[in-house]
Amino acid sequence: MDKNVKSIADHNARLLNIFSVCQGLIFVLPVLLLYYRDKVGLGFQELMIGEAVFSTVILTCEVPTGWLADHWKRKYVLALAGVTGMIAYTLLLTAHSFVATVVAQGAIGVGVSLVSGTLSAIHYDSLLMENRVDEYRRQEGRRHGLALLSVGFSSLLGGFLYGINHDLPLIGTILADAGLVVTALLMREPVRVRSTERRNPFVTMAQTMKYALHGHREVAEIIFSAAALFGTTKMLMWAQQPYYIAIHLDEKWFGVLLALGFLAGSAASQLGHKLDHRFRSRTVLFGMTIAVIVICGLSAALHSLAGAVLLLAGSTFWGLGWPRVQDALNGCVDSGRRAMVLSTCSLMIHVVFVPLSLVVGKVSMLYGAEAAVLSLVVVPAFAALALLCMTIREARSREAAAL
Image 1 (spheres, rainbow, N blue to C red):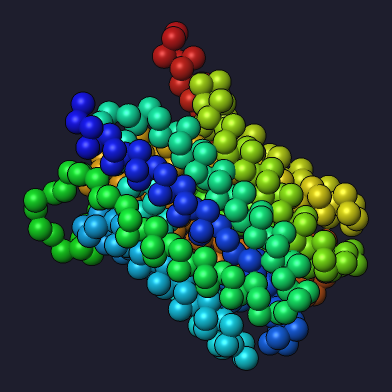
Image 2 (cartoon, one colour):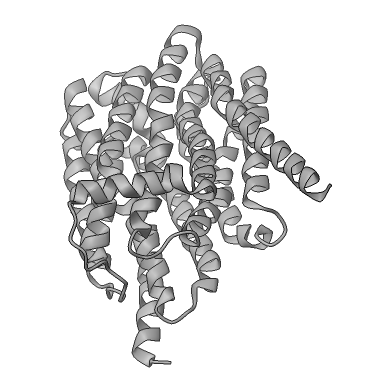
């Protein structure tokens, strides 16, 4: 085996871990609602409108940035994401109106879309160069776990920084994005198979979307199940802050609780690969979907610190499930379209999140945080029913074939 090839895979693995740690340093995350309230004079509904714009931008950019990552050097795409993040958080730091915050959140969405499929694709292709893809699931789980641990650490620190100065969490986040640029440029681009046929990029994107969502049942099932589950758990994370306010939790504990959730998510991500050979992907996704339904119902009923702790499970499910979904999709597609298919999955999560965020924000304003949390059971309930129906239909087909 070529030593240089091996060094590229190992070199990139280390830098991807560092990149994920820097990306996870979102110091403003646990106090964003407080920042909107204290600095801009906005509430949870306005924050959710901004998050809907953020996700809509990702919907618009996800597949085009996946195409860009498949046709340009992926490390440059990651570096561009860091530059975009620095600009976006600077816009938020200087925002003094609702429109300005929406523009800033939209810019953050551009940066996120540049990373989503690109990071996993460069990791997988680095291992593919030397036939080490069997290491991907474990390494991806570790990387994802480090990212969640980083988010937890920054959440813990962000709450205390906010108490010192309201701008400090945003300044720390901007500096972390500068680290993304440096780390990305130090990566080595892996050799990958590119199509020599030159096509209109919009035609290529349309074909990839059709491939991912229609032509391949296994890929479509993974993507739609992940969209329902992770679109809901993403909203679950945002629902925590108004829930904390509703139970009169002291602001200094916002970051602590969020940090505990991400710590649990980090542990789940790094240990999740141990479940891979014991349960099918459908079984794992179904189990987590049912668990989300139960947690939302209990948390809404409890209206207490115990209910707030239950909401932290959303981060655990993200840590446990997302690396598995990425691994399953990577195994189904070739390197020429890998980033676009992974981006399609991320895109579908935001398809779920956009209307959900608007509805939950409105419900929270009209009926309170508990009702908002309870409303989150609708999407996973439909997803669980769909997975159950598919399982029953397959079982009946096997019985019929055996007769």
